Image (cartoon, rainbow, N blue to C red):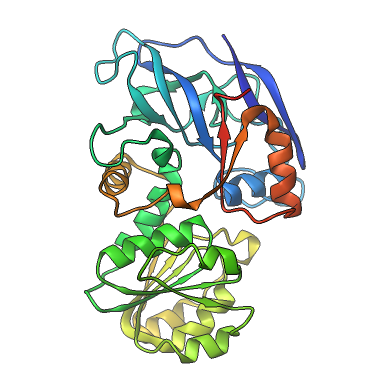
Length: 332
């Protein structure tokens, strides 16, 4: 079976091409993709050759995993289902995560159309609340933010600080705010901070250095690090409560070293969310449906899938402002 896909062919090389995908099996769902959402941080680190698997940083001598179909999140319409599939039928609007591909370094990928996806990695979109399919295209990433915001213990009125103004930072902050926290996001991009949901504060670290920002943030119950900045966390740590929480969700590469003894002195609990599981995905879908997680206002670019190479050049070279970047498969 043939499909169109975005392929990372080598370091910093992107192509839109026809690929082979397995014939659908009895438990598979075939989806005509409408939108796939780029996970900028994760996908960019693979494109740069900085990691060889989901959590493994590239080491000297490692063989880089090219070619590969990047990504893991998309929405579309069910085209056909396998004979054992009971939860979905042709015509359903669905979210799909990783789909099967052949002849690549990894046997699965995200930016591929049509997609052949095992039913365990497919979710039916709701027909009430927020019903725009595009709102659910980043469901895996939104789940990371949801997970960051629900892992730590927090009570209404407690202070939470999110390091990073990217998508995970926004969704972590939204989740904590929905739980009643006083949330402050520390970021370095004025326009991203301007996109924070109402009620969430932002501090621009290029204008207010981290030590000055920390002096404004006493009695912190939760710190969520979405960018892999232990240096910023270490400045905030003395301002954290006894029995508080650190949630680490940023990719730390080879710098992921933390002094457990320092955490123990304040009895800080460390949370390390990674990946996705069905119950968290279900809860995230409900949060998007109910409006507790907002995705559509964070989209800055909707780009035809065939122009993915230009999209990635924009991201790599930071040619213009961007946050949520979506590939539109309806426009070839």
